[in-house]
Image 1: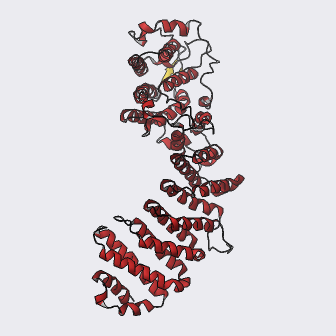
Image 2: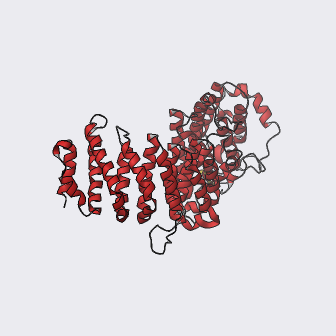
Image 3: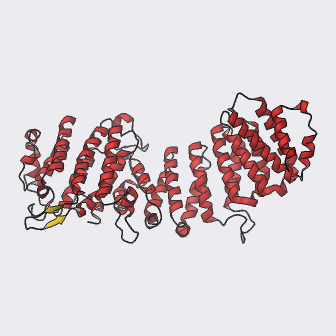
Length: 526
């Protein structure tokens, strides 16, 4: 039944419980742990479910509660289909889907995470000590239920007809999906066993709906038929994804992010208004890990929603300001995800630099690159230097000839990065040589006045690498020498071969043999 998941499971408008149901059944609790669930009347499936709810709600030992869950698992695995799923002999006006929605809610609530009352959104690991065992037991119960619903059978009726169980499986899929995703990720509230059990449950939910993957379960077969459960899953998460509540349950952001990344084009466009604000809220947190998670979500939206929809209602401009402000936070983990996201966003906001009809005045590409180069020039931490150098090369590729606007600052960055070794990997030096090579290729007419400074820096690098043989592996040293030589070759082309003339005059007694080999490659090049 479409939309069942979006209704509150506590509204039992169609079920008339007997006045002594829950209270009297709680009295039977002491006896119930020794009884089999099969001893209940064949017409009392509601009483069985109420008994389960009573046992889980009443305080007791963990062993007793887990025994209760094991009994429920056996009932779902081998119980009579007519008793479990048929409405013909149940209480008048009963709705079997609502009954099972309530029992799923009770079971998942039993293994729910403790809520955080403070604004920090984090609890010590000890707070989740009992959650993995409870989650494993609940997953086993729900897995048995899913396998019965997904067996392709119908619920028999006393009148000789059968009702398909597919509608019940469809109604239970959204809460089961959310619960499985909660416990299948590597988090403080999961263990190896609970993650395995949750993965099996998710697989059963997917297969029970006749789908091939989680993505297909969420999106459905086609865009127009709306057979997926994404709308219902987002409706479940909606109360917990508000600005005031999203940090109370530590799992909420992870469920949302995992679910979002399973949905691609063209399905995500329909849900843009529901996922974009939540992603912005997560990325706007003061904690770096939440900023990173939010930017991941925003980047996924950016890659899977058409540019026209992103520009609508000024969404792209809002996203640009949010990402641009993140550049002022000097955290490598955050900068590493923000810069690629910004680069893809700029292609939505601006025409490609240097293309026909593009105005010559500076735009957001220049604004971002200017800020990146400013931060690079002052940055001394190697981990951030590597991140900046890797991404500025992508900007130069995209900006093409427009890079000439930033040559002065770019020259200072290149010289500074070539001087400092980050052995043993030398990622920063290798990447900045790539940046220099791209810059020479794009802006070579403007480099003649900078030729002396750049050649001097590259020759100094050749000497340093040839003399310091112990700091980096041979393969890394060879790569450094090769890229520096390639840059010198490009500079020689810019100078119409004047470098060859200078290098031929180098005295062999003044340089290391490794440096001389590199210079020989330049003088011998045609």
